[in-house]
Image 1 (tube, rainbow over the protein chains, first blue to last red):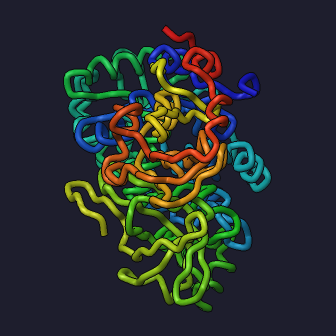
Image 2: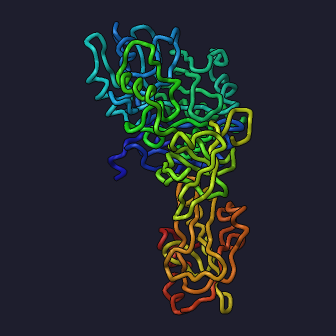
Image 3: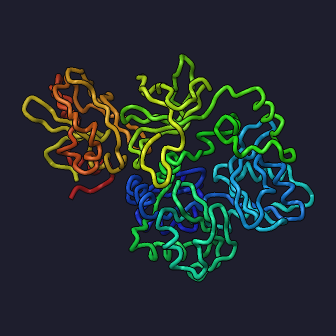
Length: 369
Length: 128
């Protein structure tokens, strides 16, 4: 089995650091080093370094780049003015979410799409299938490694390794050619943890050097490597969705609370008609956050009951900062208002809980809902 | 790692014979594998547990696992403190983190359990 799994350029370093490796989306990835809770707390209070090189990077180049991507995704790529990034779903004609991705705008004729590892092959096929003759689609996934430096100390740590003032990079902006520890990388002020932080897109061969340089530069600040386990609890507390768990091709962006990324007034895009219709007719379910009484965990797929109607859990965990059993789930609209009671069936028992406003955690505040 | 006076199930529970009672918990190996344990669900006092059938669950951040009774019998004590401090399963699995005490109905079942070195071999470690 492990022979079939792909390895990031940092695989050897993870093994040496004592990481527990697990198969994830076809990759052999570190789920934890010191422990999920310890890594989670480090990111909330100091900093953590993640290897997320399994993510896919797809370059779209050519005079038609903007117009082409604009037709593929629901958000409005024309709003990007400089070297900016945009979060957006990419939908089927029925409005189902094929993937959620980041669009990086290098120029009018050069974009980079960053997609989920589990969907890279399917996304690539879909994108190539729809490509216009005035764009080239280039899969850069194997050449690019991705390091996420996240946490309140991230900017200070990164600054020790570069002359570029990284604090000047605004949220969801990036710089395409920053010299960090002697290597030229893309520095993006983005992340998936709910904390301040940066994502560094680096040449695969430079990844081990940069990983070690960052850990060394951050040691006195308490920077530690963090795995996919902490990444999941951090993103859940921050109310960030996971494709394949909280949404997929059977759910639309409107149903999962991503209406803010659906720009029906821009030029038409794949899924626009279906989403316009759904918006007019109203939703039959909504993704909500909930908190359960007690400590048992609502896992993906567990049934939800509210007002005698059914729903289902899409993500759930007991998370370290919020210190409650929290989750996301799809429920009928009548149950979706914060404060509404619901129950989750856990091993045959109805565990009571309450719908809460998302996110569970917001930077600088430490309370649930 | 695996105290010599305990008996072990292949499902990673330990059993300590205390006169006519048996104290039960999970091994360091299981606790380490689960890591970050956040919830423990135990039976009530008076419940009957059956040899190598689930008597409760332990949940870590990432996964949920069944607990298997290393002996059949009636539950006479439970460690209610684990509900609030499940993390002791990771720090002190053989003492503070005991789970239940059972009055066995068939002590012969205990003979089917492993001793410390056999358990260490079962989990692929050498007992030091």
